[in-house]
Length: 260
Image (cartoon, rainbow, N blue to C red; front, side, top):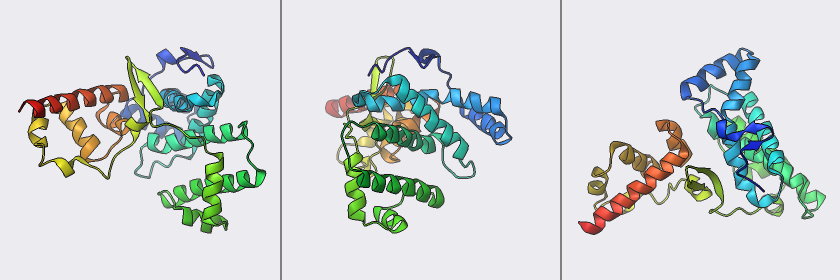
């Protein structure tokens, strides 16, 4: 699948707009008032998000134009169902919606035959998960999903596994300025935070040698467990820039600790 086409579905991906947080808020206010033009602008302003997500499915051998269109459907569903009263960023809500829409498309077009009964169980579980997540504002457990649809959690786990396409943590999801971002870069590590080795390697001293921006990124990433996408939104730079600054900061810290 050609993931680096400049034009996808007639859209020049090299010139996709990037909305500021203030612009997003203003547009959403207008969307809630029924402004169709604002909705179109909001969709265009989030096409970069769709583009980055479809690159996760590079091993699917599906046409990139088709995946982009399906991703846009997921984006529009996210916009239409997003609840601004919840303390959740739009991207946090939209990403799983877009991914879910693409996965449903891939399952329906999967060349590997999965029994109809397994697919039905999997679809019921997926829809129940989405409904419970929206209802309770948190991701449900397998047991909760099982109780909701009246199917054993073992059967649900088996069905979901049967239709799942494995994805490597080293799968590229986005590329900008020669820097490639991988799935593992978007996974927050809340279990193994840096407090565990703070005293051993004089981490604080090393961080004091960083610029204020690098210092802030390291704190957000490794002390607060945020993903690169979340950090990028918080400090208003691209995710590729966050990745570049993070790698530079870690390298400088490592050199300091070796030389001291």
